Length: 97
Image (cartoon, rainbow, N blue to C red):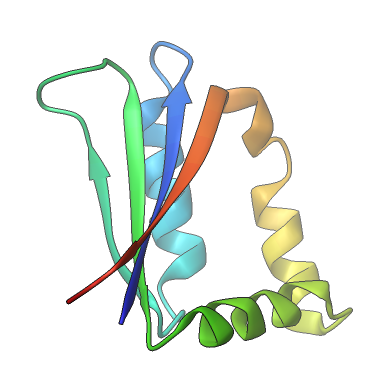
């Protein structure tokens, strides 16, 4: 199993807004597990946790985001401007033993 952490360091005042936006957009995503915000450590941090059976499944999941489907158009419209909410980001991929 693969666990993915997509990490965003938000501009001050935007972490909860970004977390709510991702929660709304990802609620029907089967791989989505949790959205977390910081309580300690680096301020203004949002972590999106998702789970996949394998790296292949992770890669295949990205294919749907490349499609020009009605679902993706709606998602892109909701996400418009989200990049203005954060300063930097990273992705960590873990193998579960």
